[in-house]
Length: 612
Ligand code: CDT
Image (cartoon, rainbow, N blue to C red):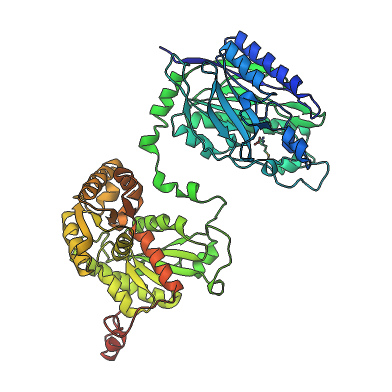
């Protein structure tokens, strides 16, 4: 049986600053009645529908400002309640935008979903992406949009919700966004990830407003409107398609106060991105379509089968970074030796990342950590750099180093360990002499020989990812467990734990029975499943903190976290190692040279053995 809902967008034309509230309300009631008479089961009204779009004005008078807001429960607010009463009487659900003055005095640009049958608000959304400015433009002719002045950014997230009594009682999943939100793919994806089948979006979008859009002031106003309309439809169609959801958008449009143009273009879009219905005017108008929600299934289960295709390990930037951080200039990379290094000297992967603008300590010099991958697999180095990048403060940068041949492409045993240590050390020694990194992290999960070689050869702090992750694990929990690749590494890790004197805190080392390169070669889901099973078993043995026993596992942390749940922690050795070293650099820590880590370089030289 088709899961069809007849949905209407109630587009609203010009609403002037001086229009009495009841005039606007009566127009809304009339639109609701029209939609209902056409069989609509749900009607969407625009953003701040009960008034003109007041954020365009600079309002300094507190009473006047308060008059644009609904205070307390919107369904009881004198200027809004009749709409909800009518919806209940007609049995038509309504979603509508309004300026909300919350009980605690905070102000939001809000929309609600009112469920007619129960006579209650079943979902509320507060606009998250507030466009425009806090201060008006200096030019008195400019159209302002002072949303940042009048509203707080929404604090309710992008939460999808189920709606009872529609689509044959199958409880369709809906989500709301408001105007500017629709331009942000992140907003759509948040709803898409909850399986949203219908996205509702009311808007007030300026047409010709060059200050606001940062566009050419001499642009033909008609061209400006066409462009704004094009972008509106573009994002609605794109968002619908890429999340396999219907979308409904309702405009407040026309020429407010005879001089502020707002675009129309209210439309209903299907899950394939196809426009099912759209407004023909810039006046009050009902746009209506039958939305068969089953049509979402195709996109959701194939092209956009998120569970199968999304690669969240590469999306950290989206959640951790707001502004743009471009890659470093090529000339800067060269100066750091990142380019033009012959392959036999190893390869370098740059990982500079700035999270925030702040003054750099250490006389403006950044802390530079070399992540040394002793094996010859560059993709592993790149993954390590990528993993740590988003966690770096602005005064830290990492550079990834990959060993040249004859380093093996994976370190699985003692032979590989020694071969890779020798090849890596030969390349790192001249590199370090030239570059003077502040610290070095050996990115092989083992008690790798390179760690002690570098400690002997240099005085900057050096640690391996295994030891660093065990320090972190010991800090965060009483018992740790290690997810190892093979049975052999299981034994080697257990020996290393003993060597580090931590065996009393180890709940177990579990083997995934995988080779190091299997981590990249085998189907990812298969690898993740194996790791998850091992992790769950270790947690069952009492491990409170898990560490991942291979640098190649670094981007699999999230999957392990998912498997063991929130109370068990997962430590990534690369991230733990970099931050451990940065802490030591900040406190001026240097490798002691009075004992085991005294350099043997002079002795070799004296013996004429300058073979490095
Ligand atoms: N109301 C609203 O959010 N309008 C914005 C105008 C953009 S201001 C640069 C919109 O995205 O349509």
